[in-house]
Image (cartoon, rainbow, N blue to C red; front, side):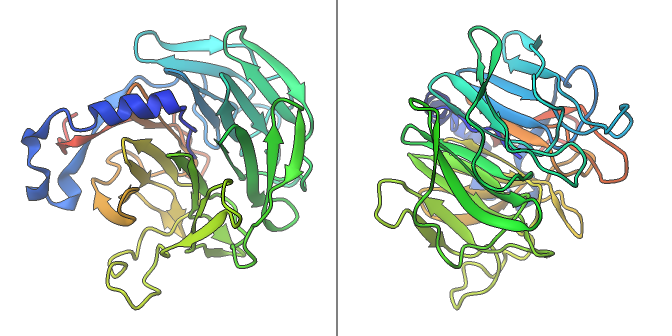
Length: 345
């Protein structure tokens, strides 16, 4: 899981990414490159499969699954987080409590839809959150098959939700127009774009990227970028597995996973935690300018999947999540890409 970051947050991140060049990163081993620092935990219930988006310098996190809560174990509370004021409770989500919802942020608003309340049926309702008024408004329903564990992103003034699971794995995408409150089928989804659930998406320089997830019980290994200005908007990138003649993917054995967390800091995307049969704690950095994956310091806390991740004001955070064995988390950790790992932080 991840939060989509606004363009202003990307700009700040790019300015501060390499403020300390004295770490001599080239001399560090992959397991020491990047530091994890404990941050303020989320109030209220621990949870996994939460929803998250970023507007301005605040992250918004809520909903999710805690199997010890009454009913179906789903939550509908919502919170904001900022560097100066920490966590603040917001208006509860007005729709049915759920986990596995998809989100994006656009034009100063957050958008949230799809998800599940029991892991058997999906939703297709869709809502806008006004961060200035702390107010939810229901909008036009998502037109695709009801689903959960889909991905969402916004590029070039439009929002997108796609992939996920309902009755089956899916690879379709729909585009949302905020002006007309209207959904349209996104053109150009490649015929060999793998169906998947539990994938991640991120945005950089007006392109979206979709990677990881599971497809019909196996891990997806294809990796795609999306540019709506092109006649063929989806472009396949190098697989995240050793499937090609080139040697650059020889060490990519453990990038594949589902329910990972991803965040962008500067010109790098960071993929961490998740599961692939068992829980995964390795962290990989994707160099967005050069198209290469490099290993970074693994997540040092309890292993988990279905956590959220976001970057605000140049600082990146990963938190919440669950183990699949009735254990959920409320802790958050900040990742500092230009510092060596310190296990005491």
